[in-house]
Image (tube, rainbow, N blue to C red; front, side, top):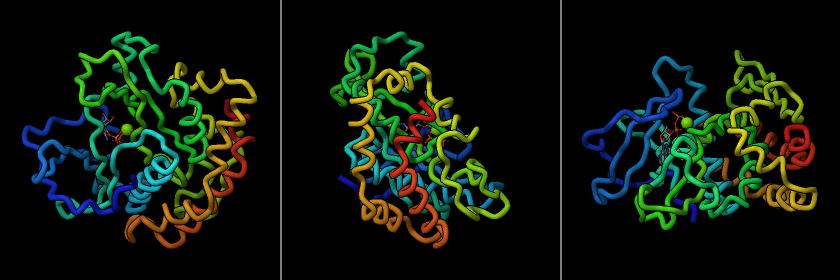
Length: 273
Ligand SMILES: Nc1ncnc2c1ncn2[C@@H]1O[C@H](COP(=O)(O)OP(=O)(O)O)[C@@H](O)[C@H]1O
Ligand SMILES: [Mg+2]
């Protein structure tokens, strides 16, 4: 179920807020819902020194959430775009009882216990579609099954996907677009550009190999999922982003980007994997 773009929740700083492990380029702090202390969310905003166009990336987190949730993919239980402490940011609702793929691998836990391993090719096709260049081991979580169980007590896990900030037309230069003129024209990529290889290279090999190993029949079925997303859903996901996170022009170009890459997802994925 897609949650509203603005949570309407009474977020406050989480007491004893520990620095976020594995934080990337954004500023990140954990918040707690004062009316429901069990509920945590990671608030990310852009560093004051970062160009204002970087908020596009926060907007893309919501777009990816709406599209991912509609496809039934394991995105966070909610992704909101709202201000906290006077700064516009994104709140990613916590996937509790989870560890990163990096930690999972370093603990040498068995892949056999991962219940949605067979769906990974679909998740990879999703990243290829969105041109997500940041599916690093930090941005893949393994959640205990059932999710109420502590990680240490679990022997089954399910993959969850977080952090879609490097998707769509962000960073601006990634497909040869002009960084000085944000989202100035749209090169949507054809899977063969040097930068697009980063979509694969960011992923742990043990992850992308799950796509590379499938046969043509399964691949066709996997890509069909992406191709099933209609223009209306793409439009709704982008329209949902509040003003201030995306300009009118960025919205039009992002819709065009997503539609063209969806229609070309066979060629894109063949070029990359
Ligand atoms: N929804 C979530 N549930 C659990 N942990 C999360 C969630 N979102 C982020 N995290 C944790 O916070 C870290 C930083 O968040 P992320 O969205 O990846 O930000 P960045 O853009 O800084 O990389 C992640 O690597 C992960 O450890
Ligand atoms: Mg990250």
